[in-house]
Image (cartoon, rainbow, N blue to C red):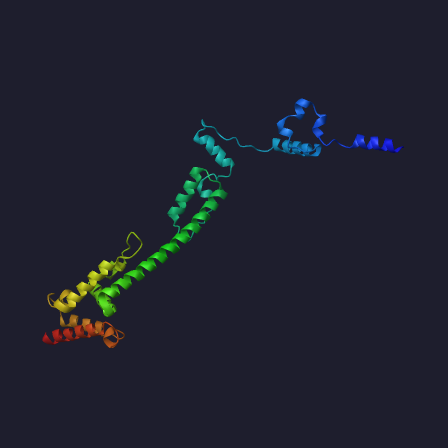
Length: 266
């Protein structure tokens, strides 16, 4: 075979640079195949299209769709049959009522199990950060309150506060300070309340005497045994009565002395 014949044979078997040139002009110019670069690419595209023919398809409802139409779509996309089908982790602080509400809401809006779990994880992370920030803000607020109270009441603030706390115990009202307010703080941390209790306690101590408030002098039927029991309570081992450095020591000693005087008078 001559060199000219070899060249002609090679030219006959080499594909054209533009494979669309062999097509009918009406087809070759169709925009849908302009991005396909070769016959091989065209074949692959056709094969993939054939595979999609048997795949399950979900029709998107139009503006006329009912809730039942959308429910069918949500179910095909992976929504569980009922709200109980969601397995969720909403964080350590999520109670059962909130978890039930979250499941119901997720099912109502059509979330799949995967979507609901991802949303629950995002919420748990957010709630944890919010709680940490809230605790930090509360700690900072309590520090500000204590600083202001110490500035107002001077160096004996601890002794005055102990006196107010003792007064509440005498009145069986210690739990009063544990009432939670709307901002998450406790009533006992309210600076106005603390200041008022200190003033009341100081007034009782300096003017009326704590025994008068407690009913020691005015309550009828108070026996010598009642007075002795109170003395025993105030002088029990480990109480401020025995600790000279305790800020409440002097007050307790005075109260015990007054009780002894009352006992001896009887």
